Length: 253
Ligand code: BT5
Image (cartoon, rainbow, N blue to C red; front, side, top):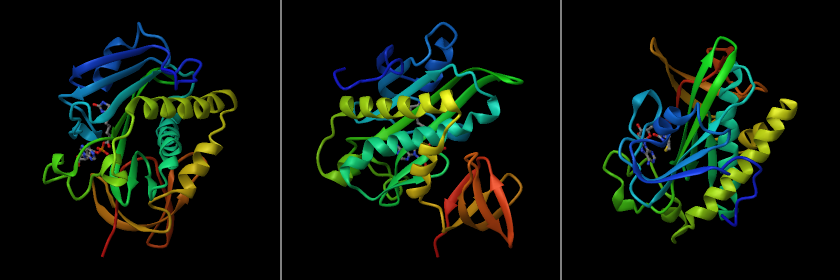
């Protein structure tokens, strides 16, 4: 589109009216598709979050897309691209002057409600990535009444927050423009400092108490910051620890 200024991200776009999941599809075409291919759907019938959770993706109301990447980086660095993606989405949304926060590692919140979720999936060998698929779901023009009972208090859309419809094509291009610019810096100099700065300065978690859920336990910890390797620094019972990913929810009482 006229808004896209990238070199390779989104230069090959596969657009679907209806699909199960753009992430799932991107994985099936990964080997024969070029680096930077983007899969976009108007509607997902089986949109997925992490741990097999459902992602609600009504027709024509959101940006449901996946970016296919074939970077020459270590599998252990792949999680950095989730934070980089969150920062790209943040950059594209900041012009709306909303109370927007990045909730490490993969959510964007407006007024404490989730407007965007990111799902990074990887196919890798021991020390080599075959491909990565970064799924981005953004609630753009969803009405409040369209969220079910389970989501109406914890999810929001740009339309709900701004009051009018948003041009999805333009926003999609702006996200891809921002993404590519941060991504090229990362590939070239292993430099993720700009994405980190955005994630740190606009964090929903830093200085807050969070509830952390692991398969073993549940505990409350204070978030101290985000480390240079994109892990979350927490203080748990006086001990400083780091989380690579995992379930973190804001602790309110
Ligand atoms: C995520 O998972 O937030 C990642 C979502 C990624 C979606 C994109 S859309 C394009 C691509 N194709 C896919 O199939 N997926 C990606 P997680 O952190 O696990 O959050 C999932 C939880 O968010 C659910 O259990 C619900 O509570 C909530 N949720 C579901 N749909 C939502 C929506 N539209 N808006 C806000 N919250 C939602």
